[in-house]
Amino acid sequence: MIKKFYPSSLYNFLRFIRSNPVNARILDCGAGGPDPKLAFFYENGFETYGIDISEDQLEATEDYCKKHNIKLNVTKGDMRSIPFESKFFGYVYSYLSMVHLSKNETAQAINEIHRVLKQGGLCYLNFLSKYDQGYNEKKESKPGEVIDKYENEEYLHSYYDDDELDGYFQNFEILYKEKRYILKGKYFNTGRTCILDYIVKKL
Ligand SMILES: C[S@@+](CC[C@H](N)C(=O)[O-])C[C@H]1O[C@@H](n2cnc3c(N)ncnc32)[C@H](O)[C@@H]1O
Image 1 (cartoon, rainbow, N blue to C red):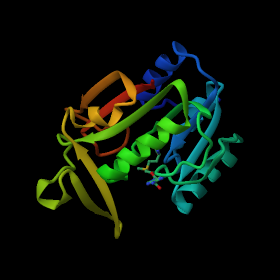
Image 2: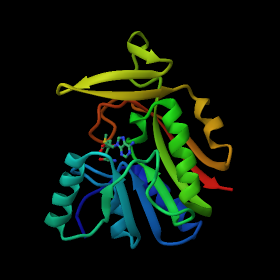
Image 3: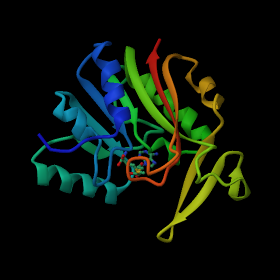
Image 4: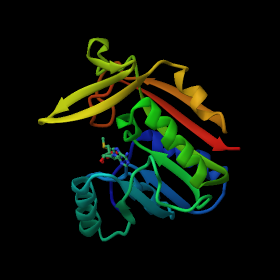
């Protein structure tokens, strides 16, 4: 087992999963990077799958897997068109990755998650609140959509009002919704200060 602690929202999702058994297959949408959250589910006995759109991020995850001698099954893929058959997964999540999609694309990705989930399956997603310090109304390209620059690359971030996302989950039951406001310190090594968490169940 890798000796580390993961973001508390993942433990919260696991708590919901344990009281809602479907199957052991879990998918991470936007799974790449040097700190793959799938390792948490791997350690907890899941059959893990992940997709990411960026070669660099995929490479970083591969390095992590080699270093720790684990197999997470992270491959190239776009959450707007998930490369898996319908009703394959018991669980799907996206951790600070769907935040990069426009609002239209977010609706599209949520439909895709609905498609690949089994009935009764659970999904955990987090989003950026408009109360987050990164939200800047003056820089919006569309309402709630901001293009940020980081190390010469441009990234889109979508920001939401408290209840704006509820309508995106019409084919789900919303089991849990949290607005996490960081008054001091950092949100798990990110500069984020206000996050909206949703755990939803496919109807
Ligand atoms: C901020 S990183 C978070 C990565 C990881 N979830 C973590 O917690 O460390 C965002 C990730 O989302 C990926 N991404 C962005 N758009 C995507 C899309 N349409 N489909 C799949 N992955 C995407 C990026 O390549 C990047 O790896």
